Amino acid sequence: MLNILNILNLLKKYLWLTIGIALAFVLLAAIGGRLFFVMKSHQKEKQELNGAKTRLDQLYQRAIFPSEANIALQKEKMADLIDEFNELNGLLIEDQILPEEMEAAEFMTFFENTLRRIRNRLKTGRVAFPEKYTFGFEKYAGGMLPVPMSIPRLVQQLKIIERICQILPDAAIIELIFISREEFETAVYKARAPAGRGRAPSAAGAVKPISSLDGQLYSRQHFKISFQASEGSVLDLLNRLARLPMFTIVTSVEITNPRIETSVNLSGWQQPAANASKNKAAGKEQADEISRDKRIVLGREELKVNLEMDVYNFGPPIDFKKGVKGKKPVAGNQ
Image (cartoon, rainbow, N blue to C red; front, top):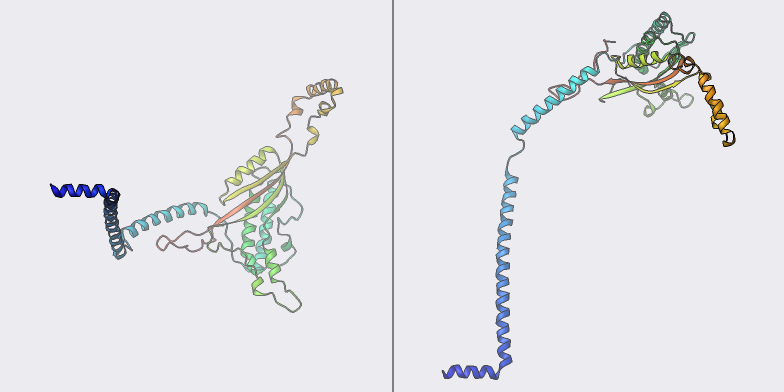
C-alpha cells in the first residue's frame, strides 16, 4: 500500500514526464500496429509475385508450339478459303482473253485478218465507220513491226477490240466514230530507243510490258469508244457489255444530243421585271402552241456517245495443296 502511494506521489511530482511516457507508449503501439499490417501485406504480395513467377516459368517451359490440333484447324480453314477463291476465280477467268506469244511476221498477218473480220462484221451489220479505219492500231497499219516483247499484249488488245466490235451491230449502232486502246508500247519504244548515236539503251531503262499478271490478283486495260446511236441502242449496248464473258466494267458514259434546235425557247421568261407580265404571257402562249410530238424528242434523235471501259484479267488459281499460284491459264479459249 505504501509503495502505491509512493508511486502516485512520484507521478504527481513529475506529471509532465508521466504524460510524455504515456504518449510515447501510445505512439509505439500505433507504429507497431501499422508495421504489423504492412508486413502482412508485404508477405501477401510476395506470395503473389512468387506465384506469378512460377506460372511464367511454367509457360516458358511448356512445349505448346506447334500445336497439332491448332495446325490441323488452320489447315482446314486455309483449304476452305482457297477452295472458295478458286471457285470465284474460275468464274472470273472463264473465256477471258489472255496475251498470246507470236512472231512479228505472224502478228502482221493476224493483224490484217482481224481488221478484215471487224470491217466485214460492221459492214454486214450496217454500222458506218471511217474508211480504212485501223481501230486504234494506226502505227502498225503502215507495215511497222511491233517490238517482240509487246506482241503478246497487242494480240490480246486486238482480240478484245474485235470482241467489242462484234456486239455493235447487234445493238444497232448507227456509226462508229473511233475506238482507242491503252497504248502501253509507247514506253517500250522509248526504252529501246538509243540515247545517242552508237549508244544502246541501258538495261535499267527497259520497260517490261504487261504480258502476265506477275503474281497479281488482277490487271485491267482501258478502252474508249465513240459512236452514234439511238437511246434504245445505247442501253442495249450497255447491257451487252455487261453480259460479255470477259469481265468488262463501264467507267464513263457521256451522251450528247446534237438536236439542240428542238429545245423549247422560253427566254422571254427571264427578262427584267418591267416586261415580266407581258413576256410571261407570250412565253406561255408559245409553249402551248408546241405540239406533243415536238416536245418528246428523247429516243428519236441520234445521240453521240463517248464511252470508256476497263477490261479485267484475273490470275491463275491457287494450288490447293501448296497454297501458291498455279500455272498460268492456257490462252486457248480465245
